[in-house]
Length: 103
Picture (cartoon, rainbow, N blue to C red):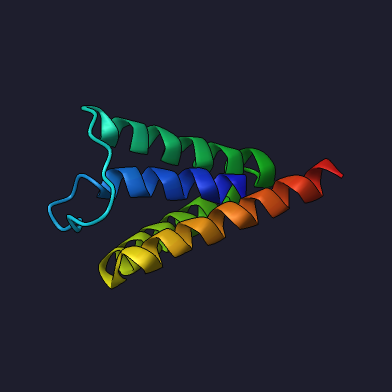
């Protein structure tokens, strides 16, 4: 889940600078947002490669990237409450995964 979280965060940051990004959602206002989005996406991909080998990790990273971008675009156009609700669900799932890994 941390790998998907990094990829999802990277896709969100990258998409937030698109001309199709809705105005009613929060958008970071610093200069190098796309660079940070790319770095988060690469970090998540490297975590997948480290966990599952180079071939399986790259395939999982590709699938996670497509899923994350699809989720960001879908929930961004549905509305503010759906988008923030999806962000809350992803954070809760990440916390559950981290708690289960710690015990």
